[in-house]
Image 1 (tube, helix red, strand yellow):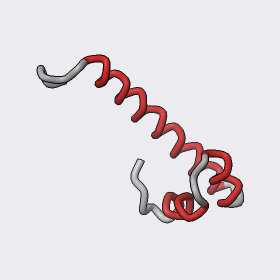
Image 2 (tube, helix red, strand yellow; image 1 turned 180 degrees about the vertical axis):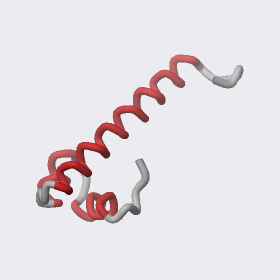
Image 3 (cartoon, rainbow, N blue to C red; image 1 turned 90 degrees about the vertical axis):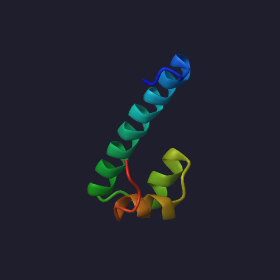
Image 4 (tube, rainbow, N blue to C red; image 1 turned 180 degrees about the horizontal axis):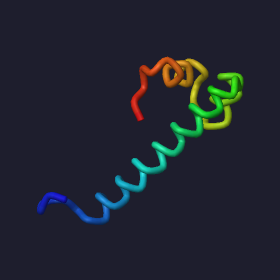
Length: 61
């Protein structure tokens, strides 16, 4: 952590990054199982188009 950072915000950001990574892993697992992209999207409040970008490797995380 840089000395000019706010520790509470850094901690929240790190928690966000961990949660997002876990979500991406879960989404990729469902895609690998052949789950419908629209159903995955509805489950996480994202569009099926965004889920397709995750599937296609266009979204990092």
